[in-house]
Image (tube, rainbow, N blue to C red):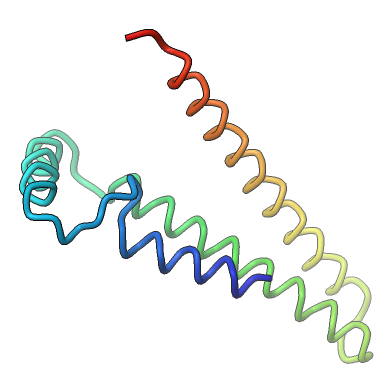
Length: 115
């Protein structure tokens, strides 16, 4: 299941956050120009980079919780380590779901706007 998330992340990095293929010349020039204008106002990583890093951290946390659970079942880890890892993974998952819900809600609000 976690590997499916990583596959989705790699597909997202190929097309960008807005789902537009980066190979399109017109789109590249428009997006590049907008990035130049936005780049002069703010220095630092972009929203897409931050969101991508958060997704990678979430996947890593879920993998750690899963491996700790397996080690606990096999008797290689004590109960406290397993509980800490699983609770951390649970908190990460709840945060990701809350973020997804906010994004979907914002999208629905935008689609309901009159032009």
